[in-house]
Length: 183
Image (cartoon, rainbow, N blue to C red; front, side):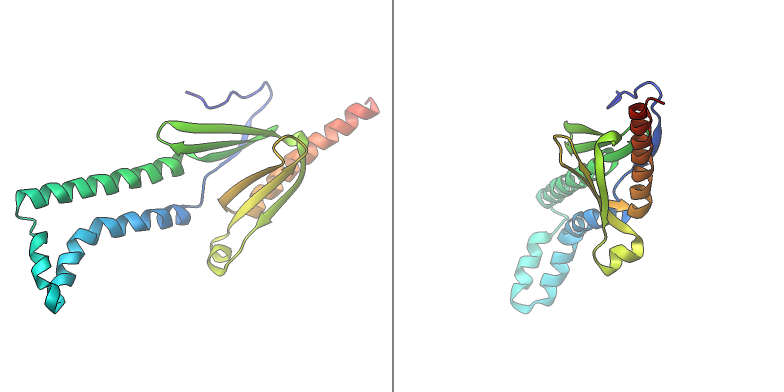
């Protein structure tokens, strides 16, 4: 199922997702939560007065195995939700518009379009040492339409995408000027 239809003469210029580093940073808490049940018993065994609690993490017992399996199932489901949002959230630049596809849950999606002939200003924000080194940033597209600001967060190579948007937006401005002059 296509999220949007291309207009006649419209073609996709660039498809962008959040930077892979930010995706891995989103997955880090789930990795920690997955190994936590294995680390807690070892930590409890080293703590003198809490050694008796370490026995409750005996994974040779069937109930403990079920609890561990349920824990990992919940952690895996949450991590898969994060992956789904990463994979399905996209910004698509065509020669006529910018399309934003936002996935909020497994079955909740929003698709927004912004026509390039309404673009007034495009800015990029890169804040921090690590994001500067990895060339990650946010792009803000200011428009004259009902959606005043269109923000893309965590984009790889934001200056390159900003320049592409401005290039195609200025091409629309040039065609508007040609139509006004009657040429």
